[in-house]
Amino acid sequence: MNPARQAILARLRAGQSTASVTDTQEPAYTAWTARDPAEQMAQFCEQLTASHAEVYHCTSDTLSEQLAELISETGVRRIAAGTAGEFLAQIQHACRTAELVPFDDPIDNWKDTLFSEVDAGVTHVHAAIAETGTLVLWPDRKEPRTLSLVPPCHIALVNASQLTDNFTALMHQQQWHQGLPTNVVLISGPSKTADIQQTLAYGAHGPSRLMVLIVVNR
Image (cartoon, rainbow, N blue to C red; front, top):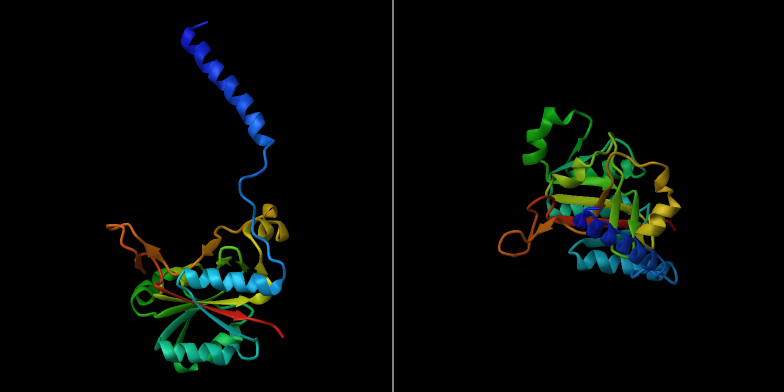
């Protein structure tokens, strides 16, 4: 046998032997878990705030007024939203002081408006992860991912019952292995980059502002 081939096969066999030993070891990472719902919520808010997101709390009854106040305070005039979702009625009511732009037209027909005239996008959140303060969006044609990526401000509505401890627990609970949509969007703060001279800048590739409304059902 060619000496070079022998050497390659020897290294592969040695690698197999090492891998079998490694597989039996304990994982280096242990997912974070909460002792109770209060700790879970505190961790979620802390992580979001650390990533420069703005966090607000409300109930389903006060959501509309809370959202209207944020819209008024931030001065946004045009808000894009989907055409379905648990809190669609509250979104429509809250936008009475601004122009609500429903995403019900092909993007090519209003791309210029979306990129240059829409101030904020409002989306529902499919789930949330306390460990990392992450929002999980599950886009579809009635609420496309564009709403969370293009406008300079993203307003996300989180139902507190959708909060889970960690990413692994979420995938198991929702049985992601049974099927996934074309896109799943994970958001842990406003868009940021340090590509240029390692200077952190917000909003270069997406929204520079992320406002999260956590809806607690009482």
